[in-house]
Each structure stands twice: as C-alpha cells, then as structure tokens.
Image 1 (cartoon, rainbow, N blue to C red):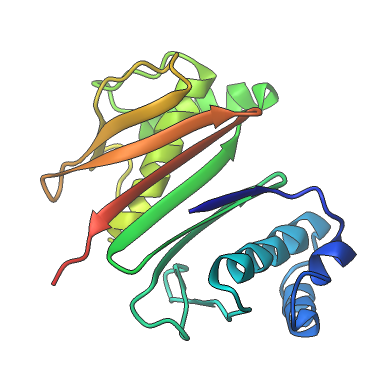
Image 2 (tube, rainbow, N blue to C red; image 1 turned 120 degrees about the vertical axis):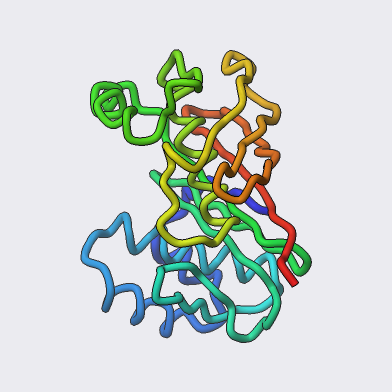
Length: 200
C-alpha cells in the first residue's frame, strides 16, 4: 500500500514516467479537468514506483481497475484533492479509500447520511461520518460484488471515532462476513483500507 501527497506540477509528474507521452495522451483524451488529469497521472507514477516499471491500467465494465500485465495481482485505487493511494496484493482482494474532511461540505454529508449510515451505527461528527463512508467504500472495492447497498448490507460495529488511527469492524450482512478496516485521520483527510480472502 502506498499513499502520496502530490505537490509536484504536471510537467514534473510526466518526468517521472518512462513513457510520459502515452500517459499524457490518454489522460488528456479522457478528462478536461486539470485536477482530474493530475490525479490520473499521479496514480500511474505511484504505481510505476511500486512495481518498478510503467504499467497499463484497464477497467472492468463495472469500473474496477485491473493490471493486464500482472495476472492475479489485485489492485485498488483512490484519489482526492492532492492525495493518491494504491493498494496491491497477490493473495487477497484489496480496497483502499481516501477522502478529504471538508467542513464546508458538512451540510451535504449530513443530507446524504441516511443513504449510508444505519440506525444501529454511530457517526457523531463529520470525521465519524466520513470514516463510515470511506470504510464502506473500501469494503465495497474489496468485496467486488456489484450493487452493494451501503446502508442495508454493510454495518460498522461501534468504534471510538475520536481515535484518529486504529481499526474498526465492518459486517457484510448479505454474506455474513466481517472485515477489519484499518483507518487513519491525517492532514484533514481520512484513509481506510481492508482486504478479503480470494474465493477459490
């Protein structure tokens, strides 16, 4: 797992890639937003650093990333507001998520809390709400099941949301499975990670 706070400019990012032209062409063909292009490129730079070479990322019909050159290597990607995160595993399905804590969006988060926070879950602060969302997002990526209902199928067991680093337990009620979610709150961001045994 690797997390990178990207402070470089676009030209510096491209300079970190062996085949920058291909990445630049793909990014600029897909996105208009400069921020989105930066994040997309930074993910590829980070993955290049992790694997020791530049690789191509494909996406399934459901939008999940995969590495065609590394059959059997599981990948999860997240990015937001200057941070990118990548998790890789040869033995387990992985899920990683990073979210920015923005107090300016607290009303919006409160408006949608009924879509992902259950009555038997406790999320008493903006950080708690974002940890609930982020944990369920990471679990969703690791579970790999389409159409997961974050409120009806995923339940976070009570944890101390005032502790800014630790672990929580998440129940997949549909499959009767429990996952450990590792989390960290830092620099106005929350980061969550989990893994799932590969089904044979």
